Amino acid sequence: MTAESRAPRDNPAPGSVDVRDTGPDGKRPVARAGRLRSLDALRGLAIVVMLLAGNPFMRDDLPVQLKHPQWHGLRFADLFFPLFLFVVGIAMTLSRRTGSPRLVLKRVALLALLGVALSSFKHRELVLPGVLQHIAISYLLAWLVLQTPRRLQPILAGGILLGIWAGFLLWAGEGQDPWSEQDGFAHAVNEWTLGGFATEGVLQSVASAVTVLGGALIGRAVVEHRDPRQLLRVVGFHALWLTAVALLVALEVPINKRIWSPSFTLITLATSCWWFALLIWLIDIRHHRWWVAPLHELGANPIAVYVGFITVRAVVSGYRTSAPHLAPLGSELAGAMTYAIGWVALGWLFAHLLYRRGIFLRL
Image 1 (cartoon, helix red, strand yellow):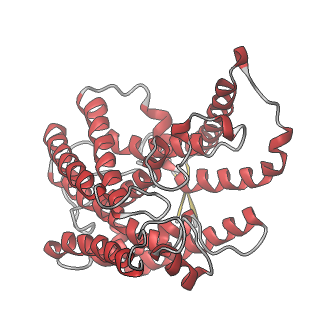
Image 2 (image 1 turned 180 degrees about the vertical axis):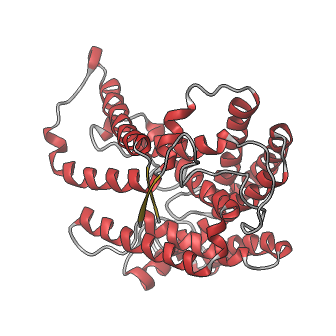
């Protein structure tokens, strides 16, 4: 991990995307007029909701849409880790760094090692799976697919999902539910590789490589379409057909974040496109930009914010029951949201201080 200092007003922050720099393959400079501010806001939006849902205090009183379902189902909070991976894919397409295998492998190794350190600190024992490890595996697999001929890449992405779908069906015995909460294909793969089931396991990371690839393919559209209105039409078109396909697949495959099922992959790819389209319309076309700065600052240092978030949460986890139980106007929901919004505010303050000092931590 390196820390870079530069004037935030003059240069794009590492972790944000300047579409003037590179071509669709991430290597060739291209001439672009201007910069899509919606891209800066997209990663920040993902960080905000991840912080809201991850607030450690009065978690049981949070709105149901900020809690992940126990097994099958889709809630608001489920949309934003996939959105973060989607933006990782966009950045892969636009960044020169992905043209260097050495830099890619270095980034993957650092993410994985930092992730293991954080997971182990959180649980007070050696823990291999975790969010940063999940990002590292999906990033590496997506990068490998992007090294193949361009026409082959969507076929490989579809093949990953079909292969995972087939794995669940073949693993289940006759008359058994392939997507059950016990003894499914994801449980078996994670048992072989990690010694037990984990929601950030190997199979989930393989499936979410498709999420990163989806972002990379949208990233090419960012480079190829100079006019935000034209880009909006392209992103909206992809959002529509992905939604339709996801709903059809969901008739056979339950939507499930815990195992990153094919239907979950497709529906969250669709919602990520919808979020991007909404921000393009609001920010780049309608020019409603007064609220973008906090999202930009959070998105400029996502790894630093996440590492700080996990570290502080691990430290305070033993004191959660000692925290005051808030119930303004008799509402425990309001109390839980007060803590959650305060948690986001602390994350933003940390990101703001880094940003104002021109400090950007990158892997």
